[in-house]
Amino acid sequence: MKRISKKMLLALGLVGPLLLAHANAEEQKAKTIAELVARYDSSSCVDCHMKEYDEWNKSLHARSIFGPLEVGRTAATFITTIENGLKEWPHSGVKTREDVGVKHLMVCAKCHLPQLQDAEDSVAREIVQNLYAFAEDPEDEEIKDTLLSLNINCLVCHNRNAITHKWTEGYPDVKTVYGSKTGPHDDPAYPTMKASTIMGESILCGQCHGLGPNFELDNPTQCATLYGSHLFAYIPDGGKHTCQECHMRKSGLGHDMQAYRSPEMVKMALDVEVEANAFQWRDVNTMTPAAHLLVEITNKAGHAIPDG
Image 1 (cartoon, rainbow, N blue to C red):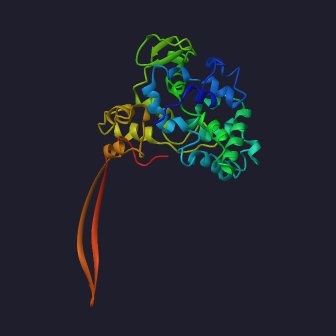
Image 2 (cartoon, rainbow, N blue to C red):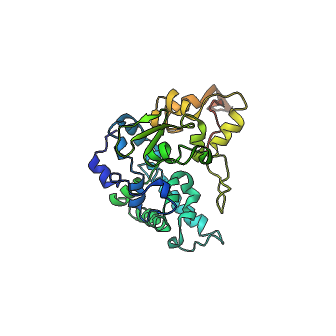
């Protein structure tokens, strides 16, 4: 995997000052994609955590709006949601693509870009404009780079989503990165490091990889259900592994965290037994080779398969 230079990061809008504090998200929401990307600028992490960055850069977290690099499947699915969902729901308020606001995109962005909640409707309209522009001209690298700049990066997991019980533990501090340790952090942008009580727990992943219907939305959707399956089936049946233990450590993928696209994960998740019996089928004087196949697939994962 070719490493991305700081010049390329700059082109993607990933290098720049932290414009707005997360704590002031309600009062000062981002007005453009560039502002939202700058607010979650994690480019300074690359200098000390290149291995983790290289792993992350291979993952779908790195392209959560665009999708797989070869096709941009997720971007296309956003358009499908607008055309066959929002426009067809009579009370959504969406008649044209220009009507799409943050609350509408959160149907998908709740998981694919949770930081969109820190933005104004102008950002949602700009995202929609780029989605349709890419569909019309998939060779436009500038549009592609804009969509790629919107992703689940270091600060989404290690800051924004690092605390779930905010009334108990407080809200994430804008100058702090959250992980497994507490102490000073050698980064002027984030000089403090604090231990997150959930960083090694499945609930961190469960914030996006879901319990099921998102009833907090005006039009609940059900896409990701892995965390619910893990919590209500795997754990009661005696399962002990967390998402991180399987998808990061046991697989050896680290921050790549692949699923069905990874041979390592497929080998861990599924046990496939195949029994084949060959014979000749005779129809009067005609002999036809035939076979009887018995395929038994056992799910060894800590959740249902498939998901999403």
